[in-house]
Length: 145
Image (cartoon, rainbow, N blue to C red; front, side, top):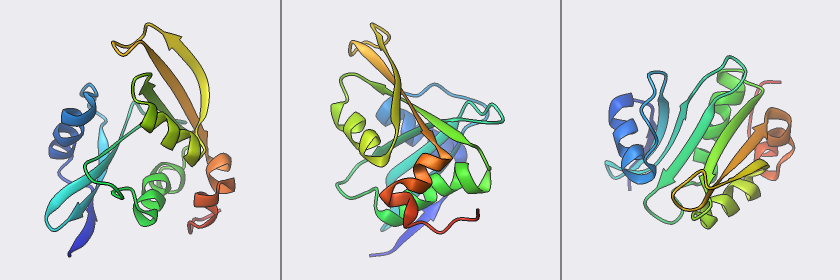
């Protein structure tokens, strides 16, 4: 099994992610993907950059796609490479598995907006850099301070 991570081409990764979670196109979209045996098995996209934050989106096709190495890279990019103090996520109320995973990773729910999504509502989540560093996954990462 050959495995590697890629961040190009961005348009192809956007299309892959959009097919799974229907995120709107953003001209500042960037992404990382996990590729196994020449097939994308997972992708993390970033968009809506404000200078201090961005939106973070995730999707995968197989159990275990989000392994510890990919998890480290997914958060290293906004917090260490871009030096952003926080990231945000949006989770439709019908995607309970994604919400459970995000909360387990250390995201905190800021607000639930009833009726903001066809599934019923929308959870707006936030992960601050210090929350990531203090999480069990973040402590296992190697980062600059």
